[in-house]
Length: 275
Image: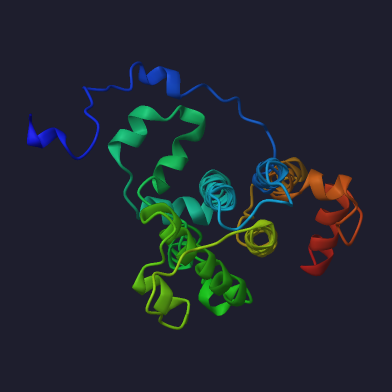
């Protein structure tokens, strides 16, 4: 008898096989980043049953998926700002990009490579990347409360991803949870998942609105020079509109005001006395 074979089953060598079976091409949706986020979260929540219990993995896995979609929103919107905003282009020029990203990404999405080394599951990184690439200080904005709430979600994510839903001491302290003589187990049922989705959605919507207002102001002021014509003005504003305007919200009648990109443009021009 071999004593080394008394503790578990024996296994052979395993390989993943063809790695191309694990990836596939994805066509750009053409949507605003906020709508891609909305659609992803809607699909994730549709897979979550109201009868889902907090002791199984479904809630935790879907929470990770929602956080991942939130991170992707920031990669998309910041990447689009690099190509859209002259100030952001200058800020991007001050930062490095991994050469591997240049080689891998197609030309129309190479700006995503600027954020491959960054995890956006941390409000500090959202603040840092917004400052470095947009020149905007979020830690002095009205986004601070929702960024703090998002941080709580990310502390829970850490325990799910790295330790099979067992909450680490560091994360527990960051969440101000009382200590216990037993291991603390992260439990996400349907109600908790809805809360997480609400926090992430509020962050994305608030950030989207904040950044749109910044871009509108720059369009009305610093982007302009002596070469600007009505055609250039319209072209640049329509690009801003298409990046930020939510067709999902429009179809759901949840946008407080109704109007086209032309009406919005003219309201901004009136505010900045450009007529």
